[in-house]
Amino acid sequence: MIKNNSRWLLLLIFTAIFYSCSPKLASTISSKQPPLPDNAFVLVLQKEDSFTNDGIEIGTIHSGDNGLSANCTYNEVISQLRQMARRNGANLMKITDYKPADQWSSCDRITATIYKVPDFRTHEKEIEWTADRKLTWEDFKGSPKPISNEKSAAQTYCGFGYQTNRVTVFKKAKIFAKNTFDCRLSWVRPDQKSRTDLLEHEQGHFDLCEVFARQLRKKLEEKRLNAMNLNDAKVVFSDVYAEYLNRQELYENETNFGLNRQKQTEWTARIGIELAGLKVYAAE
Image (cartoon, rainbow, N blue to C red; front, side):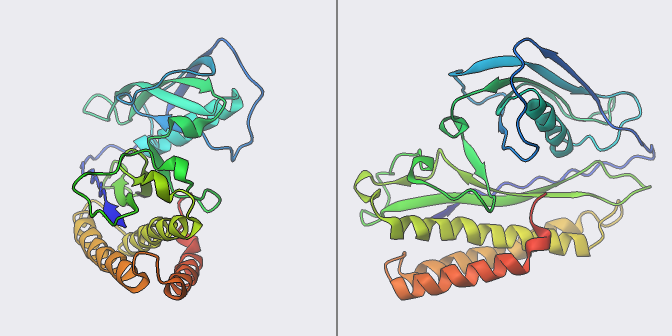
């Protein structure tokens, strides 16, 4: 069963100032660990997220504005800070201070403490879709809702949304679209955790969400958004999201919540084909 937790942000700021340099990065490292591979996952926890350290606190990393900064939206800064974390052997980053771009700075400024923990999955609040990370029942950290259909075995809460960079009159918008699974809201009944068929069905919900996240990226890129037509992104998102809801409902109905094995197999294959067809629009 699917429940949607739709989040979408649109940043529309007009400015005639042109920036050309990267943000300023700094670190204070007290317990450096062996570096991680460049593609190793680094979990990012927000300032308001609870966290109990069960590993090693490595130090602090920071991104600021050097006065002529570009490529320093939240998503771009997080990407660079993740690389810093990997170089110092950290697989978890807890944001301790965040200042969004304002009239004083063109950059999102972020300070975070980095850690090496035994298993970052135990600290996850949400999961960004990746091809090599499949859901497990341990990812469903929510509690079954009393008002839910008593026949419901599990619920997947996922959603996709987008954000743009700071748009100027000199350059087109950059689009950042993300598809996430909410661990805190998603749940499974304890007596259903042995069902691999049910887990496949719930993974299908998340994968279908990724199909439409990629469709969103594709259609927004085709719009060639700039400072003059950035509001068109809202219309594109609304259209894609409406189609997404219809497909999720069709998925539930045709598979009978995963109980129709033949239809489930057909849908799993169909979603895989759609993902492959949109591979060029996968998140970087």
